[in-house]
Length: 86
Image 1 (tube, rainbow, N blue to C red):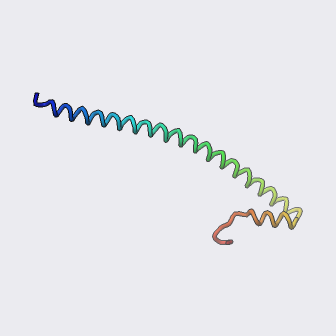
Image 2: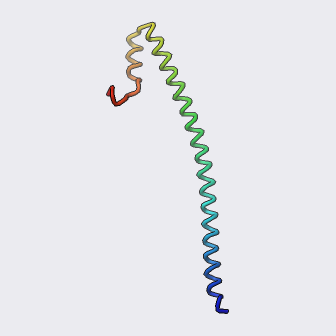
Image 3: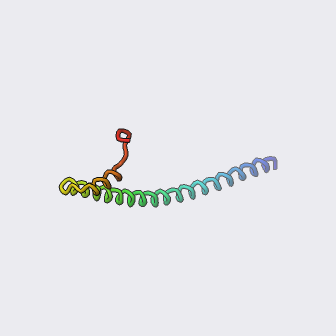
């Protein structure tokens, strides 16, 4: 039985590879479900952002016709900051 040691080593290597394969499969499953959950959250956040931008655009259009200084001040404070108008 001179191959008994070699068989033991190969069985150990096989067991380690099987365990690693199971771990990587579980990690892939959990990451996929997390990605789906985060994707849904990002879609919801994007929808809310679009609604807020629409409201701001409507308020700005109303301010063009009504010329309310208080509304103009509020719209100026919530206007997005860019590198040019800082």
